[in-house]
Image 1 (cartoon, rainbow, N blue to C red):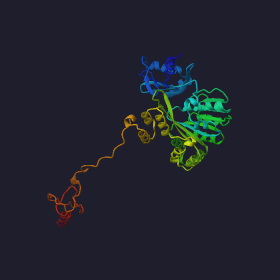
Image 2: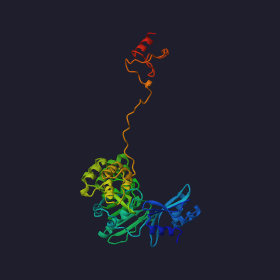
Image 3: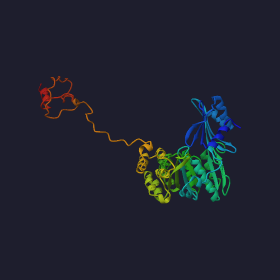
Image 4: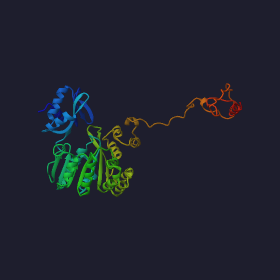
Length: 427
C-alpha cells in the first residue's frame, strides 16, 4: 500500500474529484468545485517526491527525471482509477490526481438529452465533445460509449492518454489503447485504427493538425468518430478545427468538415445550490443549414441557427444555464460566473427578477456625465470673433527664419482677431 492510498480513499469517501499535492502545502481536495485542505498532513520535499514516484511506472519515473512532468494512470482496487500528473515548480515536486470512478455513469444518471443519444445511433461522422479542463468531457463520452455498448454490436477502439474508464465487453468488442504504453502518438494509433476494422473510434484528444486530419478522413470513410477539444462553445469548436490548418488548405477542410461533422456537445460544470455539480450543455446538431455555413466560411452565423433549432435538439449554453436557475439547481451567481456571453445571461436573469447583487456582477457602466469645464485651459482655444477682451502685452517680433503665421493660440487679442497679425506684417 502506497503512502498516498489513504488520501485516495479519503477522496472516494467525501466524493472529491481531485487531489492536489504540492511542496510546502498540505494536501488539498477539490470538493464540489472548491479547494479544501486536508488538515494534519504535511510532506517534506524529499518525502513528497518519494511518495509520488512510488506510484509511477518505471518509464514515467524516467520521464519525470528528464522532463520534469509526466502523465499516467494509477488504480487502487476497490476505490477506482486515478489520472495522475506529476510536475515540478519553483517550490519542488507536485502532483494532481483526478478520480475516475469504477462505475460508469449512465446517460440517464447524467441527464443527457435525447439529441446526445441520437449521436450514438449514427453509423458515420464526427461528434466532438468540448469544454474546459475538468468539465466532465470524459464522463460524458464514457456514458455515450456505454450506451453504445448496451444497444449496438460493434467494434470500438479508444485511443486515450491515459486510459480512464475501462469498458467491459457487453454487446460490443472494445480495444482500448494508451498513448505512451500501447502506441507512440494519437496520430499513429488513429492511422493504425483504419486497418483494425473498427465501427467506432474514440480519440481522447485531437491535439494536433495531423490527428484532426486523420479523424476527419476516418469519419469520411464510413466510421463514427468521437473526439474532444478544449473549446467553450459549439461555434468556436468549428473555428478551432478549421484554424489548425494553413490558410491555403482551409477551404478544403471546410468542405470536409461540412460533410463529416454531425454534432458538438460543449459543456461546463456548475456547482449545485445544494452541493455537488451538474453539467450545463450547449448542443449543435449539424443540419443542411449549418453545413452550408461551415462550407461558406460563415461560422459566425451558426448561433442564429442554434437559436431556432430547439426542435432538432439544439441548445445554447445560456439556455441551459437559465433552465438550471429556473429549476433551482444552480444559483444565479453561479450561472453568471459560468456563462461565456455574460451580458446576455445578465439580461435574462434580470428579467427573471434577479438583482445584480445576487449575480455578484458589476452594474452596467453608466454614460459619462457631460464635462462642466473645458478639458484644457481656456487660453489654449482661439478667442471668438469680435469678443472684447483685455489687451495683450506687446507682441514679440517674428523670428527671421519663420514665415508669417497666426500667433500661438495661448495669446488673446482685443478687437478684430486678425488686426494684430496685419500690424505685425506691416511692421
